[in-house]
Amino acid sequence: MNVSINDGNEDLLLHINGLYFFQGYQVVEAFTPCHTTCYYLFYYKNKFLTGKSTAKIKVSSTLHLILSKGIYVSSSNPISQFLLHQEAFSPLPKLSSLWKEIKKHYPTREAFHIMSAFDTYVHKKDLISFMKEAFLKQRRAGKLLHAYRILRIVLDKYPTNKWASSLISHMDYQKYSLKYQAEAEDLLPYDPLHMEFKLYHNRASKPYLELLDHKLQREERYLECLALYYEQLFLDASDTEKYYKKMTDRLHSSFQATNNMTFLTYLYTEPLSKQAKSEVSLQLVDLFIREKRYKEAFLFLSQQTDPLQSEQVDLLLFTLHHLDTVSFEQFTAKTLLHSHADLSQIKKAIDCLIPKLLHQHDITYSYNWLKPFMHLSLPAILKIKKMQEMKEEPDRQRELGELYYEFDQVPHAIECFLWHLEMEENDLKTMKWLIKLYKELGQEDEAISYQYLYKQMQKTS
Image 1 (tube, rainbow, N blue to C red):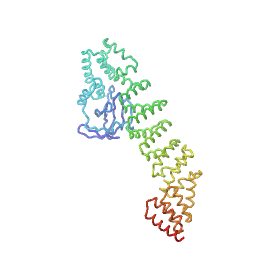
Image 2 (cartoon, one colour):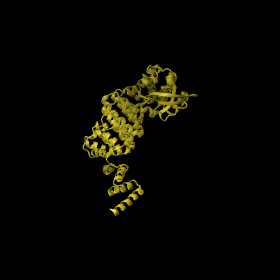
Image 3 (cartoon, rainbow, N blue to C red):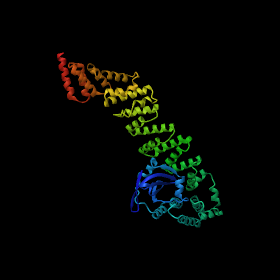
Image 4 (cartoon, rainbow, N blue to C red):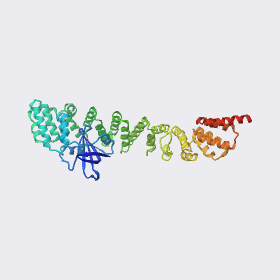
């Protein structure tokens, strides 16, 4: 996956390597051709901020934290595509102008949180000086809780910062410090920004994971929800079913059908459990059908490597009824034979397939395709056997034409009746057939001609 950017006066094509989620940030890692330069494209809650070429990442930086502790998805994952597909990166905003915009549109602590993502490119002291100024303003105004929260976010970002460490233990803030020792569930509504930092860090713990999921949903951060569920699918086999359901529920409720199809198609290629894979298959085919994309549904089902389950066979039959043509080179009898279809399903499939076979191929090809079913005493199979036997017998062409008609193959039936009429030109029954079939085809002139001949023969007989 590639994106185009303008870095100053230079247009660049970047190859996306992956995407990271952490505490509201989305950071895209990308490279110029031949991996000569690495770029990071920064988002906050799906809103693009800017991009920076990056030769070296500070170990104690927020960017390093995002890359080492964040949720990673590859460039081929549709989650990356959902974020990037509508973005135009031209030109990349400078940090100085970005900082002005962020301070204008976000509360002080959140503005600091956003800009700290760029502490690889700017001095920490410049960021912290902004927080010092905000802290002093709140303290002078007697807003000690706000002042305490500023110290708290500085220490979340930079735990060894001496200025914040020396002030936060002051007795003026003791009652707030005790408040922050509360259970995570109680502290979350009290300081959501601080708690999300904790939740992301500790999402390996199920209680923290559930709280993080709840927070993301409440704030409608659905792309982050998808990334979180995707990560959990592969971490704990016991929770696979739970997070698969959360993922598909979120897809259906918050994303368009085409995005759902893209994501489920991708998910099907992943190393899921057999049960989860079966669920993905059913949901994907159901989506195709609801969108009337019957060919895609049929191809997906017919190309499965595992035997189709009974309910998948039902879906296959449903799509077959909505298709005019089928590629019988790709779709073989083995798909049905190796499935868990019962005899009634096999019968329905054969009844639906034979007219399509005869419409696209001759009787010999159709007979050979159906050979694996020849042991079944089904009416349609018995008719195909009979047709194969009589196809070259001149005196049985009228009978062959009648069988073709039973399979809705009117042009083939006409050919047989015309052949028969060449040998028995006074056969009134064959003429009646031709009048009927030409009328069905809407060829009124031919029907009238044979109607006239029919009446003339009736008079002379």
